[in-house]
Amino acid sequence: EHWSLLVESVRSGKAILPQLRGKEVFDYLKDEPELAKVVHETMTTASDLAAVAVVAGYNFGLYRTIVDVGGGQGGMLSAILAATPNARGVLYDLPEVVAEASALLRQRGVEDRVRVEGGSFFDSVPSGGDAYVLKNVIHDWPDGQAVAILRNVRVAAGADATVLLVEMVLPEHDRDFAGKWADLEMLLQVNGRERDAAEYRDLLRQAGFRMTRVVQTASPFSVVEATPA
Image (cartoon, helix red, strand yellow):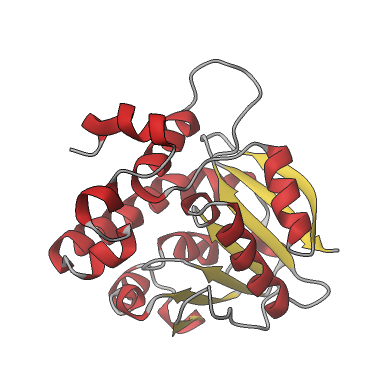
């Protein structure tokens, strides 16, 4: 239904879902618990697909405490901790999202190494992490709100912490790429967008970080690495 109105969304430059439903997507999901359950389970599955390549392509063993900001039910964090047995994790997302996380963390054998916290990254982010992972978080939001999230991470992150954005960083070429389809999806649903490396560098700079590198993986996902400026 949403994609059938793609042309209208492209013309206006605005998400179509709020126009159809009369509310923003995350408020809409709160009022549709059965749909929200499907969405959260789908995101967990998507995290599993990305996690294999991301964990293989980036060395998370450098960090003792890993905070997964907006980490859903813990799919990505579970994969990271499985590959780094000496690390501990903090799973942070909205209370109604992390309420279902314990079963998955237990199933993956990492429950005893994860502290689960409920809250909004627009209010605050747990402190004390050596690494802050944000997978498919920043692409959900336009620039202003994306910077606000990153600034809250900056408040929580110590001087030696590392921020890791797991995103489909748009390439410079004009060939097909999964992130370009995701870019349209973000427009339709949430007024978000995928970004290229220069755009991520600028967002991070505004939030008080310095982008150090972009690590490509065997999947469409890359790891955008940054440290406090």
